[in-house]
Image 1: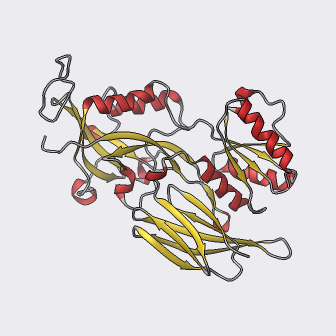
Image 2 (image 1 turned 135 degrees about the vertical axis):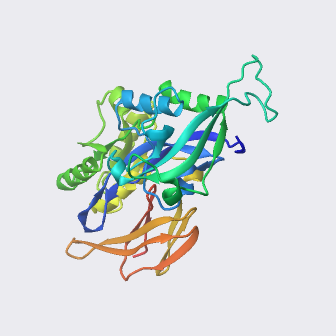
Image 3 (image 1 turned 120 degrees about the horizontal axis):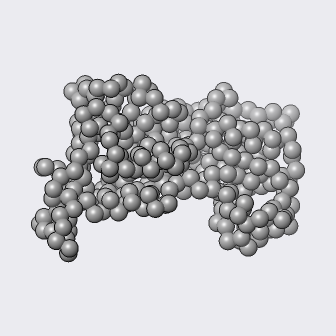
Length: 353
């Protein structure tokens, strides 16, 4: 095999859900992404809204099957030894399109670049991912839909099996995908909880966390406070989680705007490494908003405000595929809050009054 060696790793990733302009919903998904040569493989596929098969919300038996397929310990799900690398975040149908590749094992190095055997004398072989393609039917058309600039990637067997083996030993994504909502505004919390549940995030409403067992507190990934919650209550809730030894993200709601609060919570739940996120910056500078991305992708910028009659006003100022780098977009008058979204990330910024 002529492919050069590539490093292989895994990292938690997120497909950002949310309440979009016009009232549409986008499902929140958490999954494990493939880190090839130190960079998420998904980002190398340009503007693609997709998740790996290693998602947190599938049954454990199916999750294990996907891992064993990548280890070539289970039969390939598609013809010609092809495996799904990324698929539709809304369903599992191949008709929506999927990134697939041939995965094969070769006899090769176990220890070093010189091809020498490992300390035990065994040749544990390499794993090769090749012939990447966008596939919408049982047969892949490499000439028409192949990713000709991606791969082949050759991974050292020991590194590859060690990374995937951690997933078989219980180190899987998705812990703490529930949110505890603390606040006195019952109607707002009910709408927020309904929106979160619609996009796949569990949510419960409470006045505080007093008397909640530690094992239940451990199921939460974030706590969202309403603006009216007094400081003593906030401190008591934080103390409850500290006593239980639970590391959660605490969110201070910016405004009684459900899509904005959902975006804040989505950001709080994002466990992907900062260095491996596509959306890295969002800031308001004067009458413009500045955003920065690390790879080509679709970017949506939405501004929110509450008018004098307490009605929510929404203005989508950008929905385009942008190149890597910094981008400056003019803001409309009286913009108050800005939400930026890429397929995998969300950021929130507050504009000056």
